[in-house]
Image 1 (tube, helix red, strand yellow):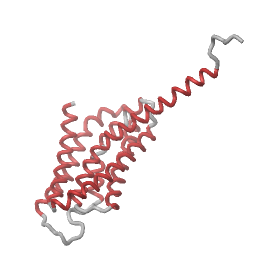
Image 2 (cartoon, helix red, strand yellow):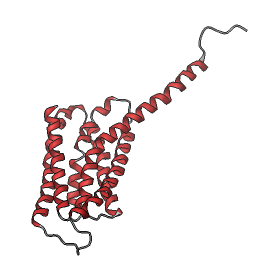
Image 3 (cartoon, helix red, strand yellow):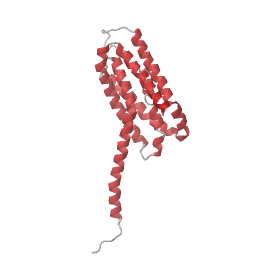
Image 4 (cartoon, helix red, strand yellow):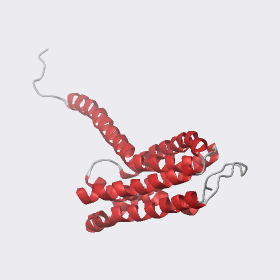
Length: 214
């Protein structure tokens, strides 16, 4: 029997079935790479938090990870909702917001280290984990994700799935960052608080310089 020179429905199905997995893999890889990039600032801040707390437990690490991850997940959704009409405004101020908030939080930590006293008998030592400072740091390290949410509207990536991946990656890295900072805290005493605060100030400065130089 002669074979028809024209491709039938089965050939089209085979073509689509071979292309779709590749497209899904590309989207997943791009989303994960984006999540890692956005999570780096949160990881650095979590590392400083862990050092400042000196002896953070797993509950504190999970709390930091959850707050940072939640901010990183919600901010792209907000940016997506704002749309292109506000893209220029967001891009114009996001780095200044990050710089200001990180400088305030970090500066307070440095001040506490400079004016505090070593106290090895007060349990965890170092600074305490306050939700107000944690929320400020979480917001400050996620303002880039707010701006990223706008251009995501122009790609085929599902914004909700992307936001969930970004949040989960940030949660994992931030939790690990706090526990890694735990190893540094006891070695440096109360000065770990100052070092962690200085790290936040430097992080805010890096964000500002990168945006101004772009």
